[in-house]
Image (cartoon, rainbow over all chains, first blue to last red; front, side, top):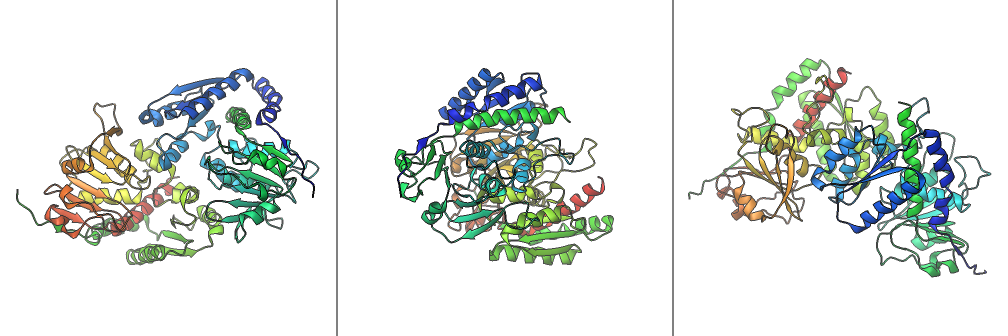
Length: 308
Length: 308
């Protein structure tokens, strides 16, 4: 088997392709939506991310306001922003308290302003493959930013086959997702299965298989525990997606089948550069696409609220 | 200082005092509400708890149905129970998947059937000291079972001073809560602070102080980080409440001031029996009161739904 020299595709390249859609959306809306970012920690990574988001907002014509707050005041400040008509979207930079208290805070954000798409109703709709918020199907549900960014990256890379019907465009594809967090890994596995892929979802404990199941009645994914090694799952995978937060973790090159697509959404690079000796396409980071999805969600939230 | 021989008060003794209220509530309702318990794990503790709940339900005149389900089917089964008019209350026995996926599942339970009071809206109302679900103040919010059980135990033990105004009956009292989980410790600390107590909330990392704050505008608790040792906080406490899940953990007797009230809500006993050489009143377990609160919440949910 030949050893193709894989190409690196940068998130910035993919992110650019969303500019026309966002500009068009803004023009249709006819006003400048305001995204508010709450910073209640001393984490320099949060501030960098906030500053980058602000830069992108200003370049594209969105308004952005960073609000520094004491962590004790955060809940109240979010509640005020929830009912403030000038605020269209809210993002909170975590960690603040850490652990479950942060998940509580995340749910304090009104789902109608939740650009990250992490409100229970959105995650529930994703798992249930429900695409609209109302029965009239005018208000579209929001997808969580990072899983959505990975889907859009896979579309850009041609993994989604546009000749197939919408909702079936990953049919025949096998994907490995190394991460099963409730923020990214599990919703991503469900999204990909809902689009027709066979997905192996790996976490430190085990490997699960997400499929859409057979039959017309199976509108949503099914999950089964499978007894397969990471290597065996990986060697079947057309796409390998990693999201391990540890800088020490590196996905072994030899687990990547020749021609596979490799995408890393962790903030640290989970693949060696040498993965390109196996992979055909390699996306080392996804953050810049995620911000585009944040703004795409912001426009959708504005449109949903306009229909209320 | 004298060394009083403290009394042990069993949860079963306190639980009995709620029987008349529950029977009266049932009579007013005029029908037998159905509580459904979902068991999707192999944990014998969950089954024991389910069987005990069933026993209490039958003794008091509530209907109870244990439903064994595969964990893969749990979400669907909860959704079916959510829209089934015959089901009045739902309890899920955790852990099922463990971690955040269990928290996701908990939020799938419709808040109108959530007897445990763990839906985001209820926890949010607790933290914000909001007592009703609607602006007409006809539908009462639900309090999470275990924190509510601890409050009721404190009322029984005379810690709440009924001469003081409602909402101020812990004024002048200092309480230490050793546990700051999102399920019990943190909501409990907030509840007690909302009732006027000074609360030290300890977890493995630090100690925080919950107070209601001063002034008429401060309707809800305030939280500050404090630099105090567990021993110093404990020695100020009129009430010490523990909820450490580890069987190895024992709260040191010498940290308990003479005459203090000691309550343990962990499923393992966090106090030595010898704590009674310091404590005036000692409640070793709270589970049986918690089940009474579950049924009290069930009646409240029935009444709330009848008003819709």
